[in-house]
Length: 128
Image (cartoon, rainbow, N blue to C red; front, top):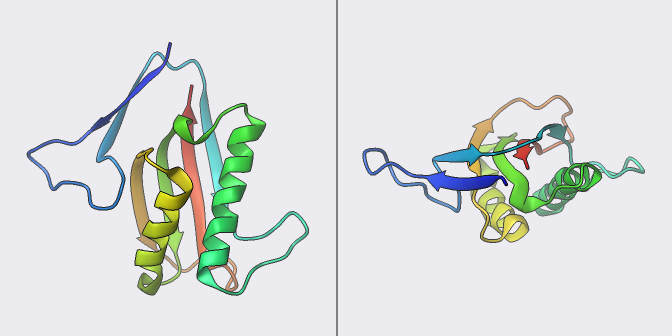
């Protein structure tokens, strides 16, 4: 039986924004490594605004989890690549909307993303 526990050392800064500084996983039988999910629909549509792109990229992450028989609760580590710092607050709000009370380990990186139309990309690790 897999157990996940958020770890937040009192000797380091507290996490701000609904994530854990570390996640301990015990008893996992499977690991799922989700490639960077982009803000593009299966039909190829890319929304113009950041909130729509972020929700779509998260839906794509959730679709990969579902295809493996997993869900949000299985997320252990998430890395979000943002094309600009201006999206940081909206990114946090949408992540919390999509993940609810689940708080995996998290890294957010400001990066020059592969396709100029993409305002973010999300990769993840899940376990069960």
